[in-house]
Amino acid sequence: MQIITANRIRKGLIPPNTNAYRIFDGGGDGQEGVFIDTFAGHWLVSHLDDRPDAISLSGLERESLWLKRLERDCKGEAQCVEGNPENHRVSIMENGVTFEIDFAAGYSQGIFLDQRDNRREVVCRAPGQRILNCFAYTCGFSVAAALAGAQSTTSIDLSKSYLEWGKRNFELNGIDLSSSEHHFCRGDVFEWLNQFIRKKRIFGGVILDPPSFSRDRKGGVFNVEKDYPRLIATAARLVEPGGWLLACCNHRGIHARRFSDLLHEGLVSSGRVSISRELRGMPPDFSGDQYLKSCWIGIG
Ligand SMILES: C[S@@+](CC[C@H](N)C(=O)[O-])C[C@H]1O[C@@H](n2cnc3c(N)ncnc32)[C@H](O)[C@@H]1O
Image 1 (cartoon, helix red, strand yellow):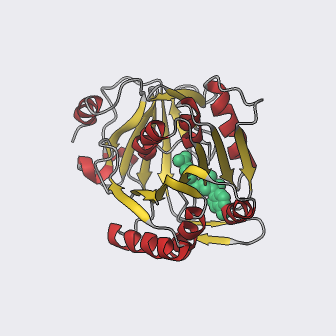
Image 2: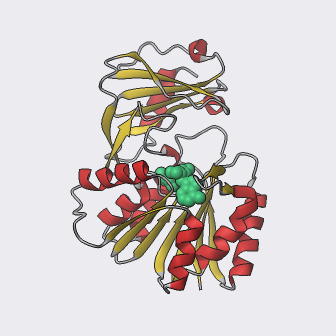
């Protein structure tokens, strides 16, 4: 499919007050290995191997164009090939929430667009709730929850610089961080969750969106396939009765059935019961490989 056509179709699918979305999604649009996202008119073309020329980029206006090669072992940053490379920081809007994007920040630009519908659902569920956001990255879920009127947000991430970026996202949306309602916890998720259990802290909603694999500074390894049941078992203990868990998995090798089994195993060992489970798909602009599995679990 031509990019012009793909973009026209996308425009009818994207919610209002949103200027960051996927324009072209690889095999879903008939060209494997090429993915195009717009961030407020600044385009990022991610491509496998040597395929950046596999598709014509002419005929559509843009502010700048960045190319990123997708390689498992060599996660390089995007290169500016059109526009001013010094303007690598831009603000985008998603459902009325503002986020800072940085094309020069490394492999990831500051927001995972495939989580847009889940952030929207958090907005619906967050008012008046204490929200715990694990693997928070730049705190996208936390900011959405705070703007929706969450009583408090707690964001956990291994990376200090991502949490600082998250604080800037709060500030970009006019949220006052001098109050004690928004907490930023740097370190390993399991260490923090176990500390919260010891302190008998509970939350109305807990968000789990882990990477497939990570290693912390002390050499501790998180492996989603091995550790997901333990993650669910630990997190479920922190959910107040009637609250919810959002469990996500973006590992392409774990299919929906296997993911459900991992969730089930974790819930059984938590000793908590799930009163509802809803498996959700990806936003409609992601028409290719449906790698992101999301399950909203009501906890009794
Ligand atoms: C897939 S990203 C999460 C995206 C995020 N949930 C969002 O919606 O923007 C993974 C994040 O998990 C963090 N991380 C990885 N291992 C961790 C661990 N053991 N404890 C805490 N954070 C971890 C990384 O630093 C990274 O920011």
